[in-house]
Amino acid sequence: MPTAGVEFAKVSYTADDGHIVLRDVSFSVEAGTTTALLGRSGSGKTTLLRTVNGLVRPTSGEVMVGGCAVTAIHDVESKSALRRGIGYVIQETGLFPHMTVERNAAMALELAGRSMPECERRAREVIELAGLDFDKLRARYPWQLSGGQRQRVGLARALALDPPLLLMDEPFGALDPLTRAEMQDMLKGLLSELKKTVLLVTHDLNEALYLADRVVFLDDGEVTADLPAGDVLRSQISQVKDYVVAVNRRGNE
Amino acid sequence: MMYLIHRHGWEIARLTFEHLWLTLSAMLLAIGIGLPLGILLTRRPRLVRPVIGFANIVQTVPSLALFGLLLPVPWLGENAARLAIVALTGYALLPILRNTYAGIRSVDAELAGVADALGMTARQKLLKVELPLAASVIMAGLRTATVTCVGIATIAAAIGAGGLGELIFRGVASVDNGLVLAGAIPAALLALVADALLGLLEKKLTVRRA
Image 1: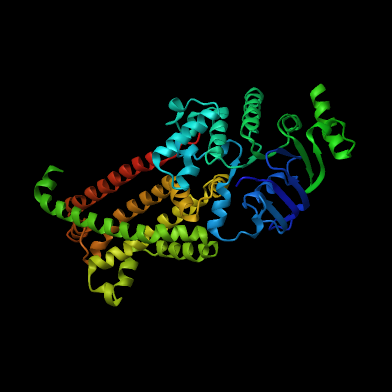
Image 2: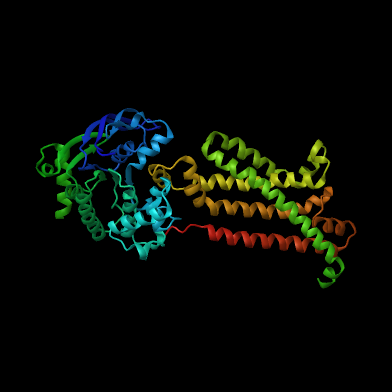
């Protein structure tokens, strides 16, 4: 998958209980850039992210990844193949608790049927890329790691197959502020090096501005603004202004 | 105690072996049915109520009555041990079925989502994520089922299926408490040992999360 732009075309999703989660969401993400989805809890940002790897099937509309319609994929094989091309990082609950660091990191390779030595070699590579000591941590289980280490292993796992697209759902949400800042620095460095297309769900404006090239604001399932990160602070769009004012007010208290 | 062993030693050994044979055969059958069925229930939620309901009903039938009720059934009634094994399987089914279902259902939805996002097929997800994470809960079900089976197997002697119940029934009939104890003590020990061993296994299979 050389290019992995993402395009949302009139994506809507209504939950089983009739609650409308997404309404006609349309925007596109250019390959090789980082886009933050910003909004309060329940605004639909996680659901939107999950339409990209098919964990959520939109009620209507289309999601395209690298020019291929995800929403049109029905068979299990193609779905697995699509998902292997997309890294997925969530809050720290995402590691398999019954697997070692090494096996967690190499899971995507194991599923792709790679040999043991190759799994080990690549696990070492990505664990080290994520800033951890492979030899020290490879045999540990997730409960033996700190929150920051767990998050790094989660990121390493997502990078194992070198996917062109990364989906990150509040990846640093569960971390203390210091570790969080450290992780943001690490990720920023990594992203500028690896040139991935990234969709990052967050409710933290500063994180969005620091990491993303563009920021898409979601409110109650609708896109209220779609701006280059540099324009957010001087935007006159009321929802964006509200967000900025709220964050600044709390920051000055 | 020594007197009992001295007097009934060989018989106790033979009947303990029979008892174990009844229990193990029933457990193997119950696992063979309960485990796949429990997995199927997690995939077909509509079947949960009727299937668990049926297993529940079997569980509530008094064991002596169930043995009696099965006696006239053509193929089963011909062989007492066969009948006992089928009845014991019925009793072992519910804990295995319920715990397999509950164990897999209790796997964190986020982790199941991650498994999907990694491109796991349903089978890979079952083998690599769901079953390992549910293993200790399933093992707890096997443990309950085994202890229940060891207990109920003593009643199987009433229909001539052998096992340690034979000594107990004979003891009761001849008002010989020693004979009752010669059957009851080994049966209780069997249950305790099975419980302890499977408890250890259950602990070993427990996945530490924090």
